[in-house]
Length: 265
Image 1: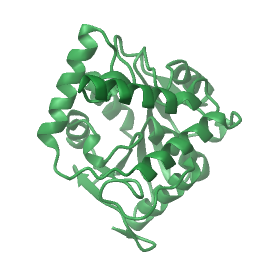
Image 2 (image 1 turned 90 degrees about the horizontal axis):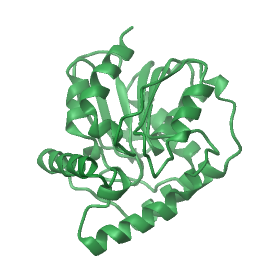
Image 3 (image 1 turned 90 degrees about the vertical axis):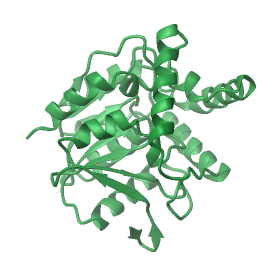
Image 4 (image 1 turned 30 degrees about the horizontal axis):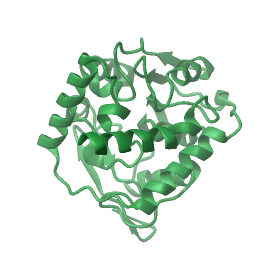
């Protein structure tokens, strides 16, 4: 899909319905979505995953602000011909979803925000240090960084991490192109979001389902509770036990039916 001269890679699954656009986390490509989540949602909803500008198979240079990423996403949705969509934003994708919902109220019908938080939320500006530390730890131990970034270090958390990564390996269909400039631009955008003054979330009048694990290290779980409380129509899913930033993947069996019920007219 060409958007103002830049090609955006995307994948579409599910029946013809109001589409659910999945907005991804830091450094992620469209194949980083858990197939249990995507396929579960696509059983009843049209689901669209895509690569952000400059990431994966999408062209262009990655923006270094959340607001610019939000503009890209709106242009992408409009280029697909949609006038009304649902959004599911994970982590950085949740920041983007908030900006879109506030700025384009007629475009967004409902939102699901996972592992994310409001602008200026506690600890969000520390994502860079947490990410770099855990990536170094993973390299030294020859593990995928998601073992540390997305899951708890308990036996149950690490078992869930292994199962999640196995699902990604079995389902991967595209080559994952990640560049250092793109990674740095996204980290810069996240840090700016974390240092932005708190915003008036009353502008987001759409129904919002908010979910996370009880032990999120990347975007501390207190942000999830704060976000749900400040959104006029926010609904907090009970925090997933023994789960971190990847709580919706670890507890996909709980997330999918709850999300499908929420998205019903």
